[in-house]
Amino acid sequence: MKPKYSVDKNNQLIVKFPRKKWSLKPKGNFGIDNNNRLFYQVRESATWRKQRSLPPRITFKGSWYLSPNHDLVLILDKNSKDRRKDTLDIKGTILSLERDLLAFEVKSYDRQGLLHIRILKLNATLFADKENRICLKVKKLKPDTLILTGSWQLNKNQQIIYEYSKIDLETKGKSVHSLTFTGFWQISEANKLTYILKHSTISRFDFRAQIETPTIYPQKGLIKYRLGVGLREGVSRQKIITLYGAWKFNRNFGLVFEMDYDKEGIKQIEFGTDLSFQENTITFSLRDKKGEPLGLNVTFTHSILKSLDAKVFLRLKLLKNNPEVETGLKVPF
Image 1 (cartoon, rainbow, N blue to C red):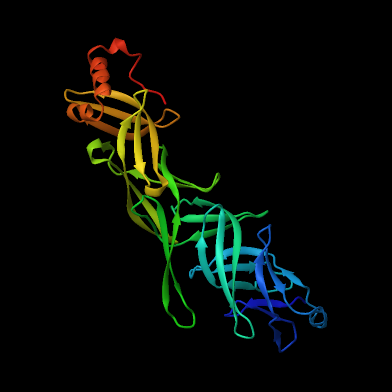
Image 2: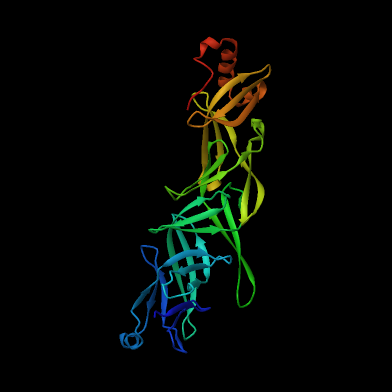
């Protein structure tokens, strides 16, 4: 029978052999290989290992999981003779989730009480699930999904931050940690709000959302969405996401919403438009890149429009009085 594995409070491997009353705590450290497999590098002499039938490196097969305390857990594949699955609970702190990597800091103490710090890295793709929770898909032959069960919000630079608390199992003290996802917003289609991550070509958050205010007045410089975020199974919380920016026109009469991300600079969200004229207002019905309606209408009064862009104001005034001058009211991207 194969030995049982577990992890002690100092992140050291415990090896328990069948029918033995004692267990081993070999010197060593955990690591993750290029295939996202967990291993333990045994730092004992060849003679010591041979006497105890241990290889220089023990590689584990299993499924990754993020515990409620935000520790990294590997649930080991069980053998046909085993009745339960062993779990390796590695205690540590999530340092970052940038560049399609989960960087996890692990602290351990050796037999002499010396502190050792290692960074474990999992290759993963970030996405938002159907409950608008931030998730990671660990790259494996059969991918594992890790879910950040806490809530996220926007900081003053309009970027997503995720805060979580950890409880020290010995002192019962609580510490708060924060993760920032650097990126920018896009409105790609109706009932969807997308956050593009700066340091990735494949990771993005597509949130299911509803327009909170379908009619927008540009002098306020904001767009509001309502969405629900799952906190745990069957429980969700409603939140309002407000995007702040300035409305401008592009060369083709399309509308642009410029957002300031502070150090990341200004990014634009571009829209196609349909126009309609009332006595003192002009309404732009926004469309996505496929030409589909977004359910958003931006209404300009003549005075606001003139103050924003006099040339556009004159062209729209001419279009209103002489519609034959322009080739239709629909403005493509």
